[in-house]
Length: 475
View 1 (cartoon, rainbow, N blue to C red):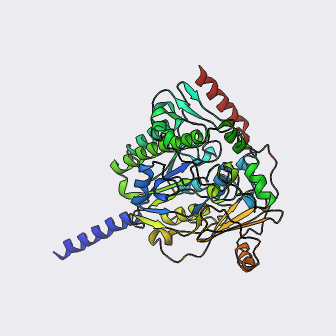
View 2 (tube, rainbow, N blue to C red):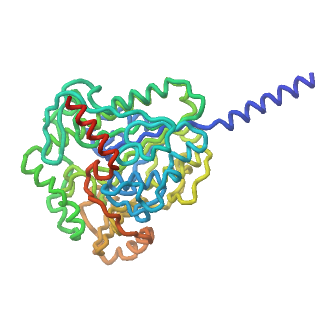
View 3 (spheres, rainbow, N blue to C red):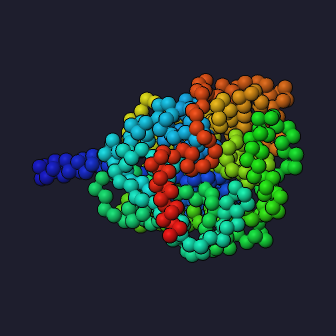
C-alpha cells in the first residue's frame, strides 16, 4: 500500500509538472487602421462590432491605449522590434523597416517565440507590407486578392466602394478562413498564430450588406468645432491640412458617405474576427491560448479638419487593445490606465515565460491584466516624425513639436480636444513634468519617398509580387 501511495504521488507530481511546463499558445490579431470606433469603447454609437465587444468581455480591454506612432510602418516596426521610432529612425512609410537602427529578424517578437520552440504561423499583414522577415516564420500562407465588380464611390484619396459578391471577394476573408483551419488542426507544438487583417485600411471596399448595416440617412458626422484650429500652433495646423482630404470631402458634399464606408469596413472586419474567435472557442486550444488583439493606430474622419492618421491627437493615436489570458485575466475587465503598444512585446514574453531581450523598451502590463485597477503611473507615448511627441495620461494630452509648438488638452472635460491650454501659465509645471517622458534620443529620419503608400515601404521583390497580384486580379 505504501508503495502504491508513493507511485501515485510521483505520478501526480509528474502530471502537475507537465501541466505547469505547458507553454500557452498565442493568437495574435493585428488590425490595420482601426481607431476607437468600436462598440464597447463608446466613442461612436453608430459602429456595430458585436464580435470585438464579445472578445473584450472575455478578458481585459484597454480603453486608453495608444500607438507608438500614428503611421503603419513606424507603429508596427516599434511594436514588433521593441524599439521606439525615435531610436530606429523609422518615422514614415517610405523606408523599409529592416533599415531601422537595431531592427532585425533576430530581435523581433515573432522570432522569440520561434526560438522558444513555437510554430510561428502567419497570413496577411503584420510588419508593414506583409509578414516581414521570412526567417521568423515556421509557415506562412499566400494572401488572397480582391475580387468582384466594384462600385467605386471614392472621394479623391478617400477610397471606398461596394463590391458585388459576398465576403469571399475581400482578401481578409481568406485570412480568417486560414486561421479557422489552423485552429481546427492538431498541433504538436505550441503555436504563435497571426491572422493579420488589412481592413478597415482603405479602400473600404466591402459587400453591400455591410453598407446596409449603416444606412446613409442615419449617419452622424463626428463631433467637430468650427474654429478648432484657431488655438493650435503652426505645426499642428500643417499636420491637420497636409493631405487636403478634408477640403475635397467638404466640396463633394459626401462626408456622410465616407463615414458610412469606414463603418462598413469595420463591420466587415468584425465579422472576420468573430469567425476566428468562434473557431478558437470550439477548438482543443481554448483553455491554453492567449489572445492579443490590437489596432496599429487610430484614424480621423474630419475631426480638426483632418483625415487619415499622421497626427498626434486622440483620434489618430488611440486604438483597441484586448487581452484574454487564461489564468491571468478575468472576464469583463476594463482598464482605463494609459498604455502604449510598446507594452505588447515585453508582456507577451512574460506571459509565455520567455526572456525579454535587452533591447526591448516598453513596460510589462501583466499587473494590469491581473487587476485592471492596479496602480499605474506611466503615460502612453506617441511619436510622429523626428522630435514630435505626445504624452497621454489618464487626464492630459501634451504635444510638443520639433519647432517648440505645443498643445495641451484636459480630457476630464474636453474629450474631443477642442481647447488648447498650452499657453496658460498655470500649466507650466504640468508641461515640464509631462515633458520628462519625451525620448532623449531623436535620431535623424531615414531617407525615403514617404507617404501612405503600401508600396513605399516595400522591397523590390514585394513590389513585384503586388504588381503580379493586381494583374492576376484583372484577368
